[in-house]
Length: 234
Image (tube, rainbow, N blue to C red; front, side, top):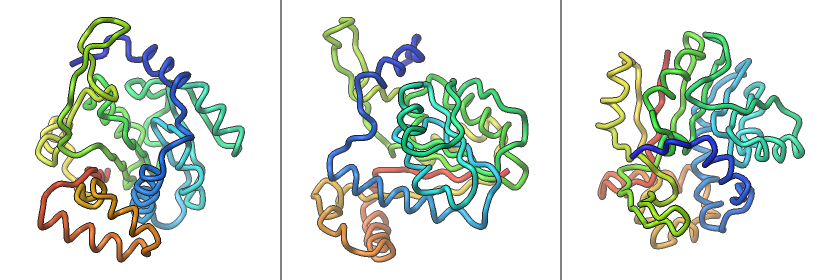
């Protein structure tokens, strides 16, 4: 399915949805996920691009590794982030990045590709602006069953959470093969057994390394992760 007017959709969405407020279960899960992403960084990079900045978690989590450049369709979200922390911010579309080639050490695309009409073009743009030796870190829901509902506003079938695509290791590999990207690593993260039963939240005081060990073991036993992390090197 394609969202023909996706720019207006997400600009309006940002006006109605508060990316800075989440329930306690989402907050805990995102904290773990962002810790996992943080561990993929090393040394101090010069420039980090965060595509689809949402609530601006990257500023709080990754600033020690370099200068964060926020990029989002929503001017409102970026203003809210900049109000809390002075950082570089650009309003724009992930399918048309207004940056020159080879200028970022890291590019983050977290919980964004499932919303975009053309994930292939978004990755291609990210790869274009990535420096040689740099890294793209992508997170998406894993093997999500997309459900459609009849929208009371437009009377059309609309995907829940505006998710247009579902990703697995196989489908992501096929996508990246079209771009002839060969240096790729996949990580399955966040066992649904832990999150659905709320066990993950009950273990919130457990150090990340021990929580992650339990998470890995469960995903090996029952292949039901919440999130697919894709790491691309250039």
